Image (cartoon, rainbow, N blue to C red):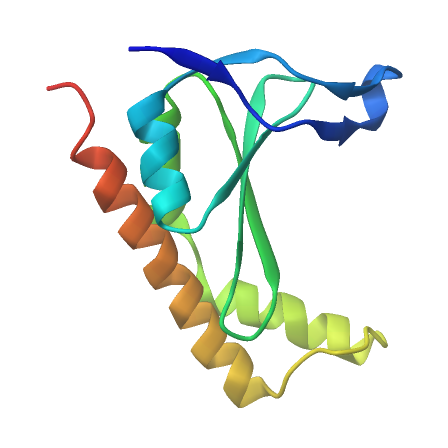
Length: 130
């Protein structure tokens, strides 16, 4: 399947600023991610960053190794800890981070993020070679 470069992203570690590299994700895999409103970026370490806005407005992102991309996304989705995500934001709010929603909204949002990840993993799994 065709391979295409992903969008440019600031890569501060490289010193070169912006980089565009071919990534071993086929067009179908990229199309699935984009159809589910995930933005895809590649960093200097060949890791793939997937970003999507949560219902509460969090710019949620995950970073997975581009090798075995689908398996890595499935593992991330399976291991996403809703409680840990909520605790992270409650702690951030206690430390003065502005714009953190209420605890009730954080619960709803973390559950929605978990569902977004599971939806992505399931869609990608259908394209995984047998």
